[in-house]
Amino acid sequence: MNTTDSPSAPSARTTVRRSPHRGVYDRDTVNAIFDDALISYVGFVADGSPFVIPTIHARVAETLYFHGSPASRMLRLMKNGAEVSVTATLVDSIVVARSAFNHSLGFRSAMVIGEARIVDDPDEREISLEAITEAVLPGRWDEARLPTRNEDKGTLLVAVPIEEFSAKVRGSEVNDKDEDYDLPIWAGAIPLSTRVGTPQPDPRLAAGIEIPESVRRFTGTA
Amino acid sequence: MNTTDSPSAPSARTTVRRSPHRGVYDRDTVNAIFDDALISYVGFVADGSPFVIPTIHARVAETLYFHGSPASRMLRLMKNGAEVSVTATLVDSIVVARSAFNHSLGFRSAMVIGEARIVDDPDEREISLEAITEAVLPGRWDEARLPTRNEDKGTLLVAVPIEEFSAKVRGSEVNDKDEDYDLPIWAGAIPLSTRVGTPQPDPRLAAGIEIPESVRRFTGTA
Image 1 (tube, rainbow over the protein chains, first blue to last red):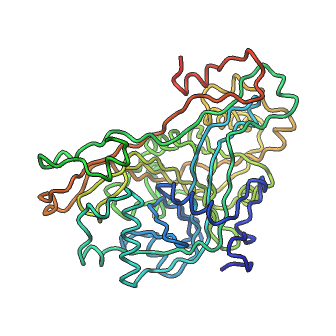
Image 2 (cartoon, rainbow over the protein chains, first blue to last red):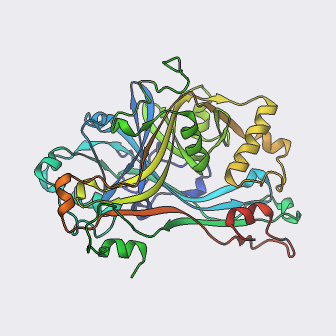
């Protein structure tokens, strides 16, 4: 689906039009954004209408994977090799400018457009199921009860190649008009990040089961 | 665009298909999700392809507003009254199940499908510009240098009615299979929220300008 020879060059569709200096087209940047983001937004066209569904994803090399029930509208449509757009965004800050007009967000956003492919190969299915669990909580695959044959059969797995892609990155710098720097108005940035709280045990947890390594690492509890 | 008489009933397009018990169709829930979310994801169709663009939004009563440069691809397409889908999602937790299969996220997600409308009326333009600034940082409109006539002219404002909508809400409860509750595997939830950091002044900030009320309130600094 690339319209250029270079795997890292943007196509006409993924070229950043607005603020082109913020367009980033290298694969590492795009991969890092998808790896950092817990969910992405899958856009698709159904009966001519645009839909956007938030979903868990995992990246394995140059492929994004999604999973779900075969009954889901999104995944049923993907069955037909439909074209999809996948966007993930991390908001890093609120940019507080002197002028109302120049208020903004610091962010990193990645977009991929590609054709969905149903994952049938048993090896690829296992790799992608593991990757999706690991994307939710790193280290969890080796702790959890692994999928049964029925659970595996009941899961639709979809792959989207990271071939036609771009990223857009805005730092936290303030960009006010020259004349506004003399105004007696505060400007700067408010950093935003994800706060990870204290693990809450399932009320049905049996006595004597300790918090596992994956949860301790993720929550920074020793 | 509603396909039913009730303003709060879902249409065929906004009915939650998967896990229908998680579908929520009241306006207050949808409004609250858009109010809490700093960005939303706007899906649209261009040349038959789906696009998903993250953007700042504001809600005023039963309308969502977006702004941007008249040169942006998204906003240029919206000019034509194109159909758009707007989705905002808040991730509240990682749900850690005993089985890999039942790992999930606790989340609140809202979706609106509607026809975009360009905002031309001067009063509505001012209300929506104020709402967008206030959505980024409450209380900032009264502190910032307000838009000039040129800035106003250089801003495309788009409205999408919250008429055809739905929400999907999943709490942080673990849903394992009955037989899995006997496994010696920890289960529970890891709460996630937004961490608001310490305000970082613009390096070009003139001496003697104190952190304003809006920033102090947002960051919880006295």
